[in-house]
Image (cartoon, rainbow, N blue to C red; front, side, top):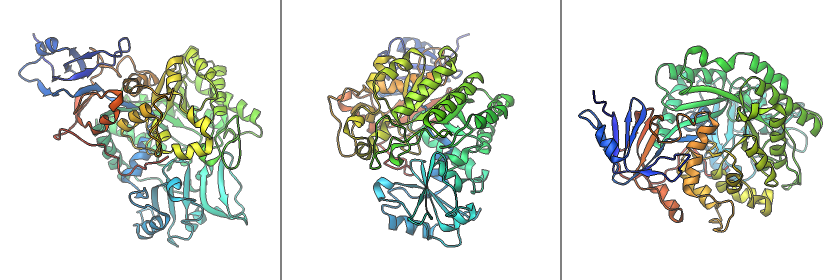
Length: 575
């Protein structure tokens, strides 16, 4: 009996992203039973029957579904649909921020929670909300996920006073008399976040589903949420709790989860990680939370553990080999320990525990010294001959030697060109021109053979992958268009590979997703226009997503021919 396709797309520019033939193109694709069934007009026509849905692409590009390998799904959902907005569109200066907070409704839990202020755009944040809304606790997270502002009521509820000790791996910003000003950075954020009531399911569930719908409208079919679990209070807005991890499982069980999601567990926040905390977390059984429920790991799986090795340059908490910033600091690891040597040794113990558990480690490292220490810790842990695919998140490199070591040992690299683009001007000031010029060495990583991917880090930046592609090709900033001679530029199709097949490699999933070949998962999107040449890469921003298919299921369909470059309104322009 003839087996007909469920869906065919014809008259297309199909980029198969075949790893063995990256430039492979064909004109049609057929989908059957959730898989790519055929390529090329002749074979596709042979599978087209009376019940087949046929889509005429009219020359538009068909690409594998985008895999955002570093997107804080839970936090981004709350930032977009659960909190008071403080991004530039809603509050362009501090007086507007205060005005928004003063008029904001109080949540059912008695708190006002806000998100999105940007110190780069607004100026110093110290004390800005301290006296706002007396009698009502207020917490406002910045768009980087590394700072929050609290008012006096919130600090009282959290028990924060002048006598509160400094936090390992974090900064309690204080006035001259030692009194906290309401600004908390990195690990110190937990002092406030742990006092917050949990986000209720009736708030979080619709927010997750709305964000899922939006991501599908962009052509995104897979993502990694880097940090859900018991230490959620120490990361971003604290919404990525163990309960949120369980809610994702509920959505998968109800067949409402159409994104493929990998999760990194979080057993320590943005500061003060210890081997003891990781050992306790691994012993809790949380890693088996989804497999124990019989959830298809191709839909939702716990992949490994997120570890914060350092902070970020802007707050002086990135660990660099050379001094940087106004304070002329080297920073340091935010792992617990009294000296650099003790902190490095503790990082080694943490990596051994994760590797022995057969899990993947995603290590946040923004300084070159932290990146080097992370790579050394992975090597010391064994990395199970590269099979674990431990990887560095963000990353900074003093020379190409570390990249060669990563390539030789199967260590991955996930970084964020849109952050570099949007925050580039302030990063250039903090790091200096020479270090900024070689920040995110994409072409060097490619030539070294590193398995690297590009990701958004939403809600730090927009999840619109088109903007990430343009940022990788141009390597410009808000004030500069990018140097055509920049040796670290990559092509648009190389950037696309890093958001499809290379991201699938990070997920241990390149055998079933990331390319459009017969037998692979039918995760794809149809763009309204052909893929642009690199000289006109900005045209990608005006190519809308006509159709998104996840596992053979149509999860987004647009009736408009073109969709301009849309910023997700709840996301900031800067990092």
